[in-house]
Image 1 (cartoon, rainbow, N blue to C red):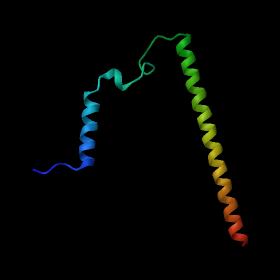
Image 2 (image 1 turned 135 degrees about the vertical axis):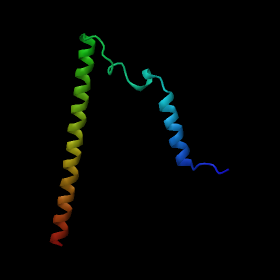
Image 3 (image 1 turned 90 degrees about the horizontal axis):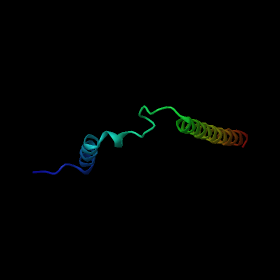
Image 4 (image 1 turned 90 degrees about the vertical axis):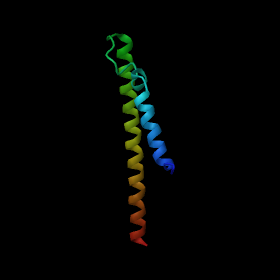
Amino acid sequence: MTWPSPSSMRAILTAALILCAPAAALACPICFQIEDGPVVDGVRAAVGVLMSVTVVVLIGFGAFAVRFVRRSTAVDDQG
């Protein structure tokens, strides 16, 4: 009898854990339909702000990288 490879064992174990996990472990309370209130509104606003800040920082980092690439190609073209 041959044993499965480590990658296939990892896939089997992951599938077994997902299938055996209770429904409460698969989603946070925000994903369930909870009653609207000031706390829920605050959490939704906080998630929106955090996502916005993350997107702005990633856009800035991308612009920074593009600027360096353009400067590098300009220097290579001159010399």
